[in-house]
Amino acid sequence: MVAVFAGSVLGRVAAPPPEEEISESAQSLWEQTVDAMPRIGVAVAIIFGGWVLSRGVRWLLHRRFARSKTASFATVMSKIASWIFVFLVILLAVAITFPSVKPVDLLAGLGFFSVAVGFAFQDILENTLSGILLLFRQPFRSGDQITVMERSGTVQGITIRETKITTYDGELVVIPNRDVYKNVINVHTHFDQHRLEFVVGIAYENDPAEAIEVILDALGRVDDVSVEPAPMAIVSELGVSTVDITVYLWTEAYRLHSLATKDAAIREVKEALDRAAIEMPAEIIALQATPSFRAALQDEGEITPGGGVRPRAPGAGQHG
Image 1 (cartoon, rainbow, N blue to C red):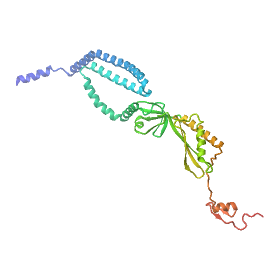
Image 2 (image 1 turned 90 degrees about the vertical axis):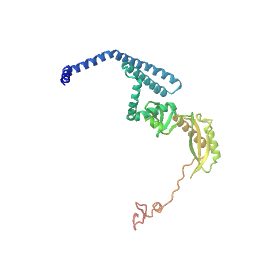
Image 3 (image 1 turned 180 degrees about the horizontal axis):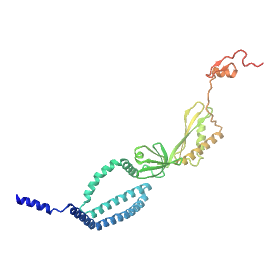
Image 4 (image 1 turned 120 degrees about the vertical axis):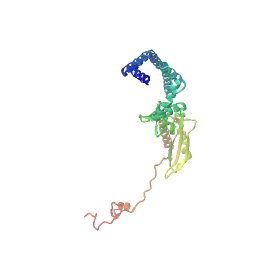
C-alpha cells in the first residue's frame, strides 16, 4: 500500500502544469502550420492556375458551341463546364494540402451537403435545370417570337436562371425558366410562314363568286402575299346586312411583317371591290318606334324620365 501511495504521489509531481500543456499544444500547432505552408502555397497556386485555365476552357467551348448551337446554349454550357473544371481543381488542391483527406471521402461529405443545399435553394436549382433542358431541347431560339404565360415578344436569350423576352411595345420581361418549361409555348416564328385572315362583307345584291374572284386577283398584286400556299376566300357567314367572305393568306411569320402585309392586302382588296362596283354596306340597324318616340315626334305629350308619355295640361305649350 505504501508503494501504491508513493507511485500516485510521484505521478502527481511528474504531471506538467496546464500552462505547459497549452504551450506545447500551441507549439505543435505552429509547427504543423509551418510544415503545411508549402503545401498551402502549392494549393493556392493550383486553384489560381485552375481558375485561369477555366477561363480558357470557357472561351474554347463557347467558340465551339457557337458554330452549331445557339448563342444562349454556348454561353450557359461553357460557363457550367468552367465551373465543373474549377470544382475538380479545388478537390485536387485540397488533396495536396491535406494528404489525410481522400477525395472519395470529400465527395461523400459533399453529397450530404448538396442535399441540404438542394432543399435550401430549390427554386434556383429548378430554374437552372429547366434552363439546361430548354437549351438542349431548343423549342425556341434567340430572335424567335413566342407567347408564354400570356406574354408575347422576341426572345433575347436564355440564361442559367431565366428567359428574357422583349415585348412588342419595347418592354423587357424576365420569366423564370421553370415557368417557361412547364407552360405551353407558342413559337410564332418556328416556321417561315404563317396564315393571316380577315373578313369582307358584301351586299346581298352582289354575286359572291364575282367578289371572290376580285379579291383573289387583288391579293395576287400584293408582293408579300405568298403564292404557295395560295390565298383563299370563302363565304363564311350570312350576316344581317352582308354576305361575309373570310380571306386567308400566307406571309412571313414575323409580326411586323405580318401587320404590314395584312394592311397592304386589305387596302388592295377594298380598292379592287370599289372599282368592280361591289358594295360593302354598313351594318343595318332596325329601329322600332315606341309610344314615347312617336309622341316626341308628333308633339303629343310630355316624355317622363322613365320613357313614358304624360298628356299635356289644357293650354300647355300653346302660344298666344
